[in-house]
Image (cartoon, rainbow, N blue to C red):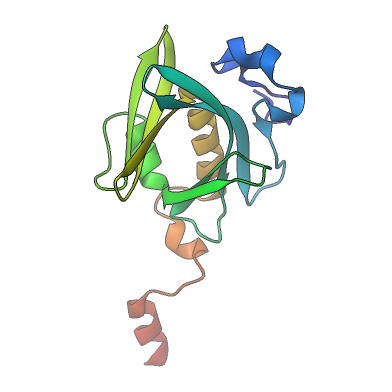
Length: 168
């Protein structure tokens, strides 16, 4: 793993899609600098028995250190963005996690690890399957930028206790 834009999904799952998408759509690092972390990949939107491939970006910015953003249909006119906790995504790699609008859990399809993400808005619900290795590597990069437990230092928002202590 080099972390360069040339890295593709072929070593992380969904390799069978390689012939369907140009190189620019396959998984690769969009950033090469510390700070924001963006990982482009193809996930599958599960609709009954059908799996629809969707170009997706996972994004993390140390300015909002507790959250990750997932952008579906990346670089099109019809994008959909979901933001949820980074710790939820971390936990969902190992076990069913989340309650309410976002639930995440690990599984396996045809011998390859996947992470399912269920997104609910009102009465509508969608489930996507992302390659587990892509999620793992994305989260590793976010933890390099902001380790767990150090989010408050990066949030730019002083805690109420810190503010009170500064006033004394």
